[in-house]
Image (cartoon, rainbow over all chains, first blue to last red; front, top):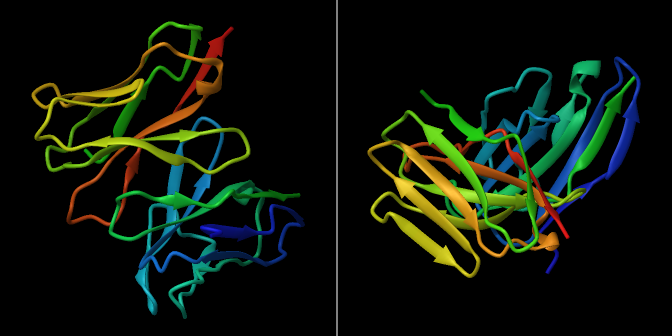
Length: 112
Length: 112
């Protein structure tokens, strides 16, 4: 019973590089979310999905893309990494909208 | 109007004392108010939640107090223990919105 699994746990990127943050959940949750967490700034929603094939922008989507081809997977793509994308990224899922999020353990990304 | 304002930013409490964290909101359409607990290196985890039809909800040592007229809600941790040292986030949402609106977080330290 893994819950929400995120990989990698840590990554250092050079400016302009691209990468994909992986997120998989095994709870058959329809709703999935990507957040970034900066010190003292709380959680900012990047993208969310209400089911396979459906995604929508959150509060801070610029510089990111997502896809949701299956219920289980919700990868986050960073194109042309910038120092402003240095952050801790969390993926979460829930059975219904907003209620009882289960979070992954996060990916700490540094862009240099 | 979509903001949730959380205070204090940090809090130090002696073991056995009461920890109190406050949140305020403007959007009267909010109808779900969860609190999440986050330990270092981990994702947030749902701690306790309340709907505005009740003024208080208690689960063990954790209590949410809700004041609808003042548009405020607070988390009380009774008999605070060193293991309660964590960052706490309040949040709010409406049924029609897929997004949780998060407070900025409170770093709680319980001194032995």
